[in-house]
Length: 370
Image (cartoon, rainbow, N blue to C red):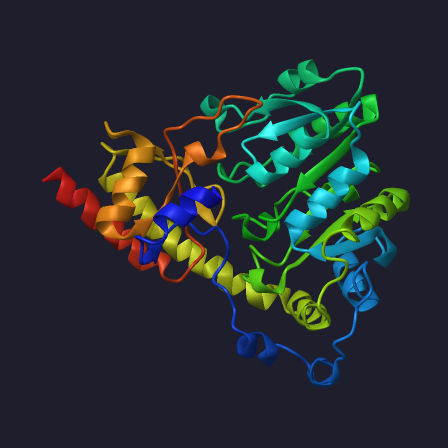
């Protein structure tokens, strides 16, 4: 994906590829701070911080979960680093893992670099549902871990509660760790109806999240793992000490401010996503000869099937070179573990400028139709 972005982002002046919410400025975030936070911000020291994350930040994160305390949280430089450290803590060369795909490709590469792995693809003909029978068939005697990403990128799929309960029962039966990347939970269309974090449902469930996506704060590089096994967190911390070692103290303070103002931040982000989804929905309906629309499953992005003769990948390249608009073809989620459809486009809808970018997309479609 990085190679694609490096090649085509230079051609594009409009970004319909990003999957994070509209980024906040430092001044906007500080306006959400209380007097105590502003005092700490002005007086914070710039020495090394606690490698686990500051106690105050870990308490703020733990408050999001029903079962986790501050000592059940490890903070890293973004969710990707934290996930990588957790995987290093759990997997050894003689182990086997099952990865539900599509998934953020660097996470798959971490797993396959550590041990043998099999992939279970979401069922595209069944609204991207997870087939538990196929997952059970992929297990081996040495399977140690199931890696998932729900809500899923790029499909937007989530798990209904019966399927999640079935997945947990399967992991419990075989003593497996269930590691779920939950970074798109804040952009789920129905946050009050969203399934709970896996750490709250299963003693071997590990929830990964961060401030980059739903909060629109990727520049803070604040991600975390919530895990009820402190020995696992200790091994993950040892892996982390070889990487970032610790967060920057200013990021920790700003992260606390964001977590306390979560609803104000994410309500704004969700309003932007809903507005863009409405425009996309109308566009897809007007161009049904080119797009086979999926119902939106996440407010950060959509994943329609492209039906044009040139195929999704060539269309995305043409869109970048001719219209200056960057979108992501589904080939970028290609997996070595299971086949992934290559006829989709992931369209980022979390940014304010996504609204104008959708207008450029429609003009391009109309021009080529003529």
